[in-house]
Image (tube, rainbow, N blue to C red):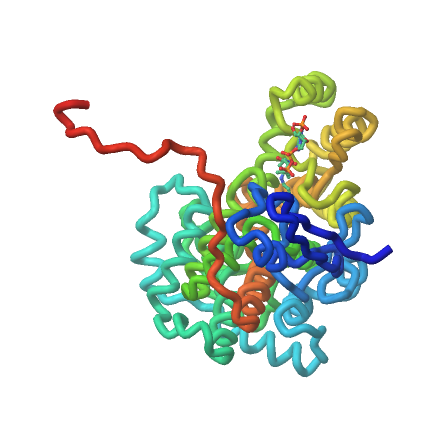
Length: 422
Ligand code: SDX
């Protein structure tokens, strides 16, 4: 039996055989046969919108690979900067390449003093850190007008380095502004993740040592969040980038998409959900409300994974390692009970709802001392590597501008009625 489909237009009898290649069929064959008939697939539930070599995930098997490397091996053996190099340039770096990459990033990690004074100080005191990040990433666009030359690979690479380098500085500055602490500039003597922790928590008077075990755990969290195929925020980065907008506004748009509680904002929503449930013995009542459709079990479910998210497994193990240093997060037992009840209940099993990357990450962040408003910002730091890899890949492929069709369900044509007769 041939691996193909046959499309027949029953109005004319015209037909076309279309090969099934890697689980997809080329829609252009459809368009040739039926030029004025569109597939209607809102939220792209069964549509591939890009060709990509960056990341592969299989929802049924529950695997995730960055450029072919299993996430479990990268989590064990690679730092975030090694993984960023892999995603961006296709290979894990040699030690010399990694040292050069780290130096380039360290050199580009400062932000202009005026940025702090004129942009950060313009926000309300209670501004959410993600709102500050979305705005400040876009504001960087005004400092680098040459970044509009997106068809030049050398220009793209220079701004890829700048964005990877400045995202932690912007994130830490957003936090320090929110707690009224003076800003701390990057320390080139520290590695990427230790430098971020120092910019976050170093007191103005100094005398702060980064805990290497916590730095290693956060670096692992950045690795786990670095990429995930055509998720909502990466699709946003590729879509905005396809108009040849600069990388800063493209990634600002991606940050905006990530902010939503159905996506990267879920890690914050999980903590608020656990705090709202309040106690271990209230878990069953909350699950009952979810099953009545009154609530969502945040940190559960996934468009692709119909199996346990491999990142959630690794995070669950990491949580125990962090809690040995920080003390156990009191919300952990409630989270474990929620997972146990849900995985034994047909409502969740029949819908293939399992814990995703956001279910345990917030517990770890909170135990490390991060406020809830910073959780999605931390997700954005890791995902910056993936967003940039996809943005660069899309441009290197010479992709056309993203412009889906629509199913029009509005009014038929009708005349305007003068205002005095309406
Ligand atoms: C991330 O795409 C990615 O790769 C994302 C990500 C990445 O790394 O980039 O993995 C990161 O965003 C993870 C997801 C974080 N979001 C949450 O944890 C929020 C809670 N989960 C959902 O809202 C939901 O599961 C989504 C948004 C993740 C997926 O939504 P879908 O694929 O559109 O699924 P759906 O809303 O159509 O739900 C299918 C069914 C529905 O029930 P029925 O209408 O069939 O009766 O499952 C139910 C839903 O009601 N359902 C849930 C649920 N998620 C789905 N019911 C209760 N709790 C949930 N969390």
